[in-house]
Image (cartoon, rainbow, N blue to C red; front, top):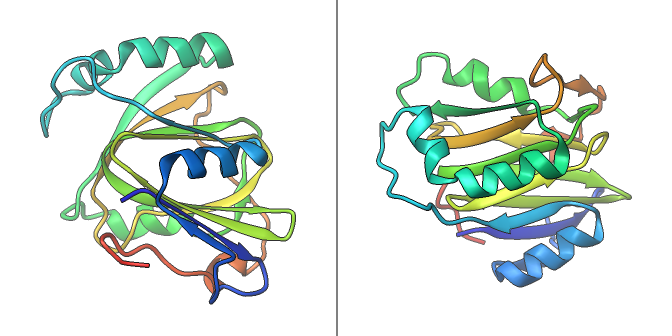
Length: 185
């Protein structure tokens, strides 16, 4: 289930807030400039569908965001537990970093954990199928897809290089919980 937990950035053991209420999640994230929406497919999507079919199912929402943000490319990324590169893919995003463009992701299937480090707090957002998250440019964060990653996501880019991370060199991400799909609490 989609969840938001907020921690003081010096104490990863006790959340200041924990909620699975989608309205509360959206409102809390809006306060820090993070977009959170729920989307529904305009047509059925099945596992293994090609990227074109996945994007066709969400065309109205994709077009709305492209017009609003000026995105120049949109793609679909998929990773499964049997991917031989899963450990390297996971490691790429685990350290605190930022981007010089908004990071906007829509989860078509599966789940992942975005952790945002803002003004002395860590906002941990467990995204599930149907969730869109828009992290503003220069917001420090990390992403964990878990040890057995399983998700399909639509990604939006304004820069032609696609995903470019600027790493902060801090160890904060190692001090906070990692993503284990299905974990409680």
